[in-house]
Amino acid sequence: MLKILVSRLLSTLVVVFGVACIVFLLIHLVPGDPVEVMLGESAQQADREALRSALGLDLPIHTQLLNYFNGLLHFDLGVSLHSKRPISEELLERIPATVELAVASLLIAIMIAFPLGVIAAVRKSTIWDSSAMTISLLGVSIPNFVMGPVLILIFAVQLGWFPVSGREGFASLILPAITLGTALAAILSRMVRSTLLEVLNEDFVRTARAKGLSETTVIWKHALKNAMLPIITLLGLQLGVLLAGSIITEIVFSWPGIGQLTIESIKRRDYPVVQACVLLISLTYVVVNMLTDLAYSWLDPRIREGNL
Image (cartoon, rainbow, N blue to C red):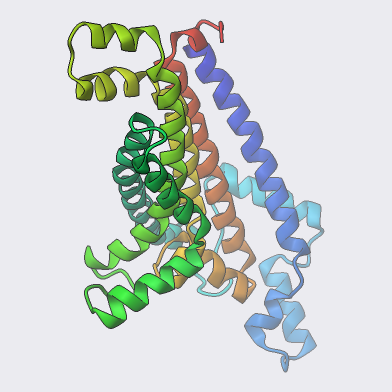
């Protein structure tokens, strides 16, 4: 297990280093000058040059890259060009909102997906199976930028049950969490169905039934438990997506998370903040995938022993 842990950590460090380099270079290739955004087009050339020199934007690109990595090694993400505040402070203010939304969405997805997937597998080729898969297909087909406004129009504007936008308590979390969670539930339910169908034909399931165990015990305690490995992999991948890719939902619901901060920083050409946001998103995705691999190895002894 220690060997697997060290291997995953080394590969994670390599990926993070590559991501940091790519993000830095791509950000500097994006058209637009942050100095013009800060001073306006009517500013004098001398003022522009002075500000560019003060921000270090006049240095060669390789020097800026070295300075950037030197800051990362000291856990210094720099200062925002727009707010003049340390970027780490801005991220710490936004991270709780994104984590809260991701966890709530994941819980909603699990509560929807597991019953749907189990019913579809147990009642294969029946109206229950068709209905469950139709619901999952609708969840996959409707994008977040459509689902979000529809939920706002129905439940916030017409019925007035929930706030339209913002983060003002538990009620404001429900609509964005449903928007993100339904898409994940659609994918997850199909995975639960397919993996459970494979396990239901195994000998240990027939043995459990022959012992006189109830069908509920057979399905939920024996069959589903042994079908969890690919499901856990998908959950880990999707949790990384939720933590990293909830940008559209955060914009639709004005949710003050990392996604909204990223879009605001792109509009302002606030390069240091954009770099920090993208790096944090990438790091989160990589770490979640690493933890998923470790969980996979822990659950399956064949992987720990190198036999699979």
